[in-house]
Every structure is written in C-alpha cells, then in structure tokens.
Amino acid sequence: MLVTHGYTSGPSMLSPGHHTAEGTWSTLLGPGRPLDTDRFYVICTNMLGSSFGTTGPNTVNPATGEPWGPDFPAITLADIVGVQRRALAALGVTHLRAVVGPSYGGWQALQWALDYPDMVDAAGAVVSGFTHPPGLSAQSQRDKLAASPEWHDGRYYRHGGMPETLFNLRLQTLRSYGLERLYEDRESDPAKRLAMLEPQCREWAARFDPHSMVALAGAAEHFDARPHLHQLRARLLLAVCTTDAIFPPSPETQELLTRVSAPTRYVEIDSPYGHMASGIEWRRLEPELRWLLE
Image 1 (cartoon, rainbow, N blue to C red):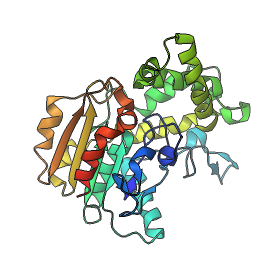
Image 2 (image 1 turned 180 degrees about the vertical axis):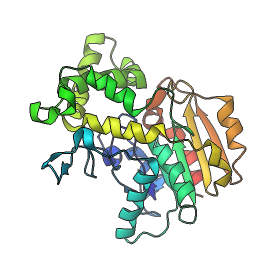
Image 3 (image 1 turned 30 degrees about the vertical axis):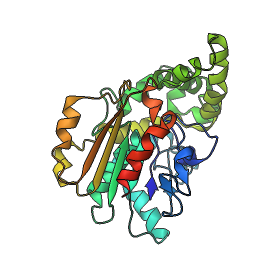
Image 4 (image 1 turned 30 degrees about the horizontal axis):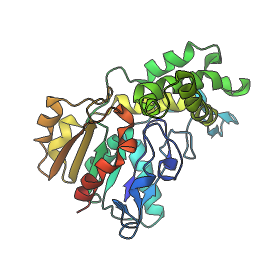
C-alpha cells in the first residue's frame, strides 16, 4: 500500500508524534489498524520536487554546483507518480492494494489510478478533490515569495534562506487549515495558543525549501481528473470536511462521482477542523479506509 503525503508535508506523516500540515496519520497505522501492517507493507515516499530527500529545487544542479533553485524544471503530477512507480519497482513492488493520501496526496492517488490502472486496486482521496483549488499556481506562489526581502531574486540559498518568510507563511497556513481551532479546545489564552503554534512553524521553516512550493504548485495547476473519471477502474473513496475552505463539499463533486463505474464512497466529515480533519478526525476515517481496503 502506498500512502501519499500533502503539499508541504512529507513521509513523516506516518511517524508517531510528528506534526504535518494535514495532520499525522500514525494513529491509522499498525497491526489491526485501518492501514494494517499485519496485512500490508505500507510505504510513504517523498514527492519529486519536495524538500525531504527526493530530487527538488534544493538539490545541487551538477551543471552549476549550486542548488537548482528557480532553474528547477517544471513538473507534473504524472512526473511525481512516475518517480514513485520507479521507486516501488526498485523495491520489487509490482502491485498496490491501494494508494491513499490527504490533500495533495489525494491527487497523487487519483493520478496513480489513472496512469497505472492495472497496478492499483483502490484509490483514496481525503480532504481532497478532483482538481486544484482556484488560485493555486506556480506564479501565484512565486509572486507571494518574491514580495519578501529575503527572496534575493530566488537565489536566497547564499543569503541564509527565507526562514522568517516561511515561518509567517506556515503560521498563516496552519491557522487557515484549522489548527488554531483545535488549540482553542485546549487553551483559551490567544498568546498561549500562539506559543503552541510557533515551534512547529519554526521547525518546518528551517527544513522546507520555498522553491518546492513553486514547483509543486506548478504541478498541481495542471491537474484535473474530472474529464477522465469515466476511465477509473479502481475502487474510489473521496472524503471531504464540511468546514474545509480548500476542498468544500459541493453538489458538483457528488455528480462527478456518478461518472465512475467502479465502486465509490463519498463521505462528508462533519468537523470544525477544516483541512486538518484528516488527521484530527482519524477515528471517523477508520470505517471508510476499511471499506476501501476490503
């Protein structure tokens, strides 16, 4: 089974105690759990273009001896999935019971099912959708970063990176995803809630490469599974959260599911935690993932 991670997270989404933007899935993993390690070998790879091991903008360009940075080539979801397939082939994996993931990981699951229908039995897209949300593009991400004095025409590596810019972006992102709402249940003092958020944001800002945000946004802006849903042969799970501002429930989504001839399940998770619901509301995902893996 392949678990695919979100836009700004990484394979550590399966590590106990590790925080990711979409929430950790470690509680779903283990013997007898929905991601049942007694039944399946569970793999989570980093995405091409991301910052956690696979080739990306922070990788050294052999032609220059410096990080690729703004010169990193444009990539697509098909490229990302193609690299994952080659990684699995190197491990001797020829068939997948399922590909499943949250957010951007859901797009990867759909791309897998479309590109390699003979290899994938089931696909799960959680707090995700059939295409990217409005406004997500390489240019929009680049413009946002270029407004910072830390940008240095995209050659920020020699200037110590963009830690403050990324810190503020992460803080804004986690708040919009609903993490602060979770902390409201634990702490009423806004200053103390901020103190709970800041260490996570600092840690991520120290590790993530801003150009990865551009590269992955560029791959996403060309992703649209809607015209191809009739080709899906894999069992399909689509779960959304009622308060998710990025992938809100919509009648169009439910109508699109009728185009899939394979067994499908559509779930609306009624939760105040928005885009973070896939991790926080993991108990509500348990029966859905078990259905997907029947």
